[in-house]
Image (cartoon, rainbow, N blue to C red; front, side, top):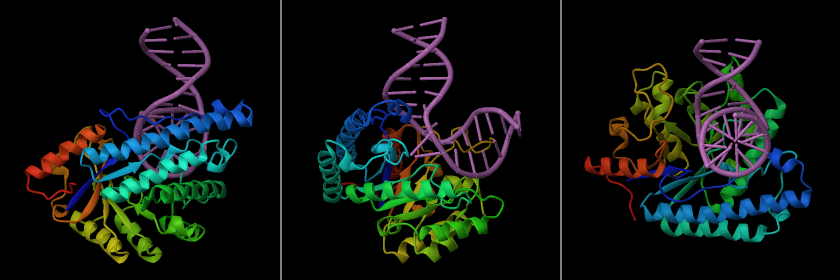
Amino acid sequence: MIRLGLCCLFVDQPIRFRTITAKRLAGLPRVEQLARINAICHENAATLVEAVHTVRRLRIGAYRIPSPLLARYTHPEVGYTLDDLPEGGMIRQHLAAVRLQSRAHGIRLSLHPDQFVVLSSPRRQVVESSLRELEYHGLLAELVGADVINLHGGGAYGDKQAALARLHKNFARLSERVRQRLTLENDDRTYTVADLQPVCRELGIPLVYDVHHHRCNPDGLSETAATEAALATWQAVGREPHFHLSSPRAGWQLDDRRPHADYIEPDDFPDCWKVLDCTIDVEAKAKEKAVLQLQADLRQRGVKLWSR
DNA sequence: GCATGTCAAGTTGTG
DNA sequence: CACAACTTGACATGC
């Protein structure tokens, strides 16, 4: 059975997450900073409850939580912990409600730290801030019950093997709760499935196969072979596979096919995925509308879809 | 009122 | 060598 996932945001549904910049907070006294952060985090946690509820109502089986949910959590100047916030307890309660709701309804939750999180960097500061950011994701994942923290390989710096060796070494510095959730994803410029598979096997972590990135950044593997390679990493840990799908905004024939389209072109859905039991995050600008449209298109083509 | 620019962070590839 | 792309809302500033 196929489970399609929504990534972070909604277009039609009235669900909006809030944020604040560090610069905006910088001039305020600490108490005032924490009050502003508290209001945003509290609202975002309540919004997340609504998001999961809405996803369930729309019969969408997976949801990627926005990383900045707890705004500026790891910022060196204005960072904080939940215990620093006046309503930290309430925020924890909302996040616990998300965990219970997602478990009760079988909705799979994931996180995807952004491009600043790089475990392969030769720069110490970059690695240190990445570790901090990943620990924040680990805390959030534990509180809401997300089983995937998905990361890219990062830069190559002229030597992929050396870079992956650094990633390998830095992985050991992560807490248990991050390590048991971390996954690696092939990207559209540097690391392919062929590059990442050995690292994933060594680390005992799963590989998130993004077929759109594979089409932009090929490695000689067929889509079937890449799918098989990724599947093996999920089977090794006894968990449901997780893939990514998107369609190019400007068509496959143009130079730059990396930007994502509003919707998924059904023909871009790999045939070899149609019979799998797996989660597929839909990366499309039209967000929940694109997920619902693809569900309808796949159903029409006889694909069995998750629905409850 | 509306358009525009800025905001923590990394890296690659283009012009 | 500078800068756009990945990506999005909040707010300040200027017209």
